[in-house]
Figure 1 (cartoon, rainbow, N blue to C red):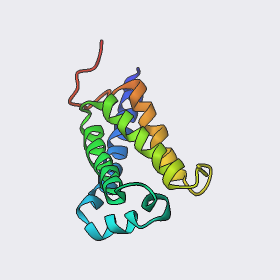
Figure 2: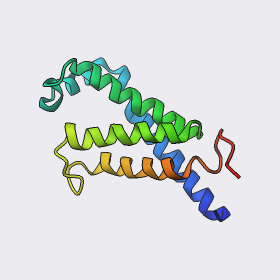
Figure 3: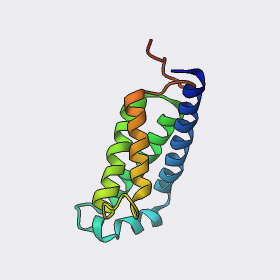
Amino acid sequence: MKEANSAGFAIVRIITGLLLAYHGLEIFEPAKIQEYASWDSIKTMPFPAFWAYLGKAAELLGGVLLTIGFLTRPAALVIALTMLFICFKIGNGKFWYEDQHPFLFFLLAMIYFFTGAGKWSVEKPKA
């Protein structure tokens, strides 16, 4: 990959990771978690607060790992699955409009699942 391209991918990886980690910080807000657990799409599931905490933990941990470029592919896979769950189970599956943000996070996660961390990461790049 060209130097400019690899730097661009790294910048997008870091920003995406930071945004995910920011959203994941809601794990430390019990009132917010209870709000999520009260949504109709979650409260029908067993242990709704557990699922809200699990989703926020995936965002926080996955975002941190993506930001630093460590365990990038497994982190990207967890993020992708979490975002698909949010888009299609929690949301309405209207990824072209209402559920656009989680679907875009899914697409970004898939890029890093297939490409790896790249430049400016803790992982050693594959030769």
